[in-house]
View 1: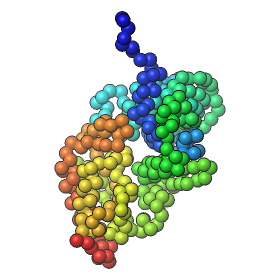
View 2: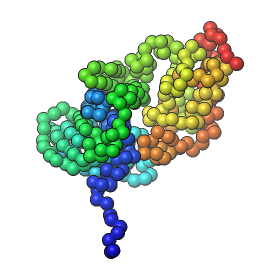
View 3: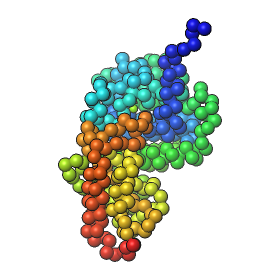
View 4: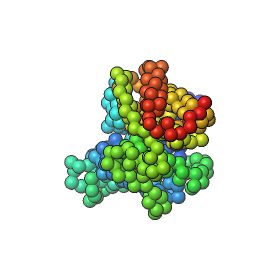
Length: 340
Ligand code: ADP
Ligand code: MG
């Protein structure tokens, strides 16, 4: 009876922790693409088969990983983005927890081909269920390609709960749209079962990304916004009273380029549109808020979808009032009916 408490080994720990980060194929795409963006890539290609259940391939032309550090990148809490907790106050990268690669590798069959600009030869590595199976030098271009096959092959219960190919594909498409809108300077190419679904220009212009995704019916009805106060800066586009939706799917809000679902921000937008669009309908918007990272906390959830602000009330009032003024002064409005 002397041994009832076990210290779990790293593979087991990673497999358990993977549950938090890797919920489904779209979570893998999210983590991999965010790494491409953090690696300063200007082009990212996502290629999925069967809603990502069969395979996910993400290729970038970013910084690459040094051959000597490839093994390290699969360890839990291994990150090049922070060194200590205070770095979170000055964080502009999407990642920082160092959990994604370890988690993804723990529950899939992974192949990585990577080359850092500083090196002549690249590295190709196979990892299965978190274990490095092989590693060899390979001739390749600068950047990183990661191929994930058989997600959840070693966690059968989770595999069983994967949704239909259709449902998983919708999730991934939606996610890629969000990442592309958040990063207009990155060209995003998205291929689903061999068919190209999206190819953004990567010219840094948000309006061109929105046009590639939603077409001119939306872009024709957008008002450009740009606002700066001591606390934050906001830029992007909001819909006029000619476009609105019965759901919130076209409300894209970002903090320092990170897609977030923030109640304060959404409430402020909603309030600004009062009596401009019908009750129960939702405005269309593509907004990025740049804010000093010290004034927010992005570390309240593993997927980082939520953010806490230092001064929510101020943010709410500034946003609401600016958007309201912008809408009311927009000459597009006079042409349409307003609602009470
Ligand atoms: P995090 O993004 O939180 O740092 P990850 O587990 O996602 O953690 O990645 C671990 C590390 O591997 C990163 O910090 C980065 O140094 C490296 N890495 C992962 N993907 C890429 C990539 N596409 N290009 C360059 N480096 C990468
Ligand atoms: Mg990451």
